[in-house]
Amino acid sequence: MADSVLHAATAMLPEGWARDVRIAIRGGIVAAIDTGVPPQPADERCAILLPGLPNLHSHAFQRGMAGMAERRGPSADSFWTWRETMYRFVDTIDPDQLGAIAALAFMEMLETGFTRVGEFHYLHHDRDGRAFANPARMAEALAGAAAETGIALTLLPVFYAHGGFGGAAPGPAQCRFLSNVDSFARLRDASRDALAGLPDAVLGIAPHSLRAVTPEELRALGALAPEGPVHIHIAEQTREVEDCLAWSGARPVAWLLDHADVDARWCLVHATHMTDAETDALAASGAVAGLCPITEANLGDGLFPADRFVAAGGRYGLGSDSNVLIDAAEEMRLLEYGQRLLHRQRNLLAGPDTPHSGAAIYRAALDGGGAALGAASGIAVGQAADLVSLDADHPSLAEASGDAILDAWAFAAGRGAIDGVWRRGEQLVRGGRHRARAAIVARYRIVLRALTG
Image 1 (cartoon, helix red, strand yellow):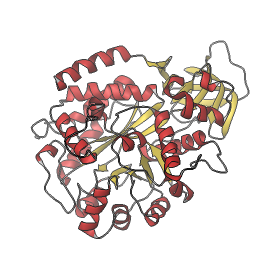
Image 2: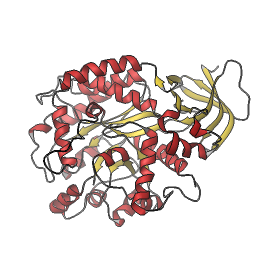
Image 3: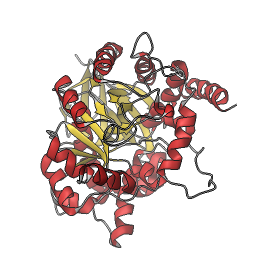
Image 4: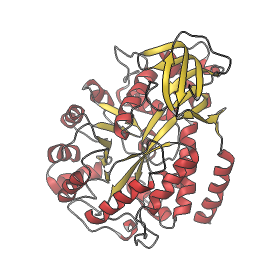
């Protein structure tokens, strides 16, 4: 017998949209799906039901500095000047404070339709740079925030050893991030223990970037983690490309594809600055491009060559990265709008099989994000009941049906259309608000006052 049953007037299933969909949930898993059937008296009802989106790239702690780096400095601002602001902010965060900031970020993700997060976690050590007695103490804080909010967690502990290409020495501001291969192995083992209490948590690894890992270390990491997701920042900034050329004679994406066994386990985060040949090669590799349009716009990174990548059969997913603004619909909208501004055309990410832009991006983000985070996405028997309902009374959704619903949500309604969110069949968000919002926000305010006062 099902633990609960949810009835949707219309739902987005893997095979397409269906009406009068009755979903039985047992132990947090979809046990049965019936279509074209009326609701039963005990069923919980919703109007429009979608699968929850994966957020494939987050640095949760950076939610605490949202809005703090928008003041012009004495010289030209860039990613690199922003990074100095980030280093100053991260310098004093302790595990409890990290947990409070992460809880706010994870709560906001759920409220906008993300139900799983890939946490690219590199804040490992104490404030003086020394390792905690438990090397996964900070990872435990993240796991605690996931448990508190209910979001699914793919934890990606980061290997970070150097301050630049070719094994350059790290700077003092990076001391809280650093590992060698042996200490990282201990960190990864301890991180597995930190996830033990979370349902369907996934553990991967993340060499931070080609700036922060040598070729020898990259090979050692591959041997250390023969299974599970592998994520890496790459080609986010033009200076990074120039430095990589100076070091190796090759561009970052080309170098990685030539020197690592990049396949469907991998997620290349940003990959903003690629040649046509790199773009085609990345698509052919099966790896997922991790795109974070809000952050990439905020930092002035540039625009990913999405039109060519998609035409070449490339897979991509969406992430919130710096968490300067957490909004799944806005990530979708900005991805398409960036391409429109670049090419001065419209509906560039749609295609013959999926002519609706919102639907094309949503389905791509489900597929690519699920692959990148090691957990399939979609409403299907045997999968976690991670679900999002939209408010059919929202004016921007009036008269929309099928894939036009996703267009209206992404390009017009935005997060205001989110009604309910379920994770493993448990409703965490109702009326657009997380059930623990008041307590999470109150604790966050106290922490932020302590960090910035």
